Length: 454
Image (cartoon, rainbow, N blue to C red; front, side, top):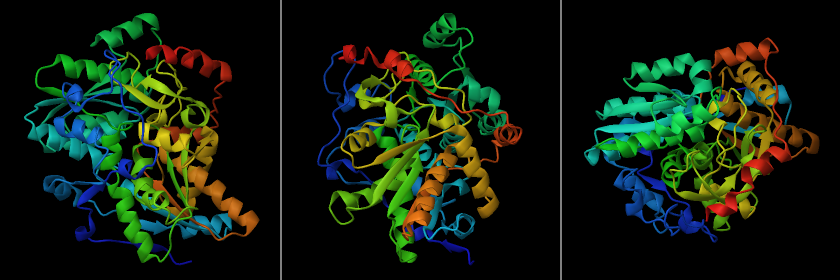
């Protein structure tokens, strides 16, 4: 079967990011200042984020926001990324479905994360910032920001979740190669980290913990800003270059997706692929298109969490965000898809899920690795454990088509490759990985006091 790849040229790189909020009938509730309990203003975010990112975060009126030329110039190194018809996977599954994937793994750091890292680093540089901090789970975001920081002449400190710091030493090496300082989180270098270690000396960390440490360092260090890799609106905005390119490429293929799928941690790559297509659903042009966020069964905020205001970090330094959450004190299992071990979803995606405009599924760890192996053997690309959740959801949808005989078109985001995750594959082949179950009691414990936050 002929392999089909749909390529654009650098003139097709989008000139503006797409902001979905103006097209939403029910807009997300505002972020809330944790001290005043009032809706957040852009200037409330200035001590933490760059001014440009702060203003983009609260922009509910402009559908299109111009991409700075300096950022587009860096995008040209690897963008536009390919859209590929997964004919090998189709053949393996014997499905009538047409499966396409947007290959974000071709970026210099191997994932989609560079799309926002370059934008945020650029805005910090323009503002005269000299130092930035961030968190990272599996290390894709940390690697991307390390490269972006080096390009724009910024010093970077990365708090890497301890379990991933130990499981994924080569992601740590990537960050150090680009010049970043990498700290295992929780650490003794911050008040938040010291408290967590004191309370639980064997704690393996979470994204919520790493965010707390990075934010604390940013606000206590002169001329320093915090830079975030997912969850918030401005990060989702920057990632829409993925879907805007994919729109043109699907037109080249003379098809339009019936189903759009991406893995889900905080929401950046799901938003990046889905929002440009979602605007056609919101305006009534494609009412039947389905959007599926694939999250880990061990961290199931969209499928089993509560829709409530919650902190984005464990220590409570961030604004209160209206989102599906398992509670900011939720301790996720030590799965290898470290980028998906986050307790909540972004405000936009949570609102869309609450309004039944998008769907979500949870994928057990072993199913994700089985899907990853099938994809690697049929398409030749070894996917990141995070992306494998999207592949598993895609396979499930394609097999439904096999049963029903429907010839649906499925598009998913291959958000990153897994060439630095081979230790996880080794454990999978050795039958040394397990699934993790979250009980209703676990969720009830970490969400029971959320209403008291307001």
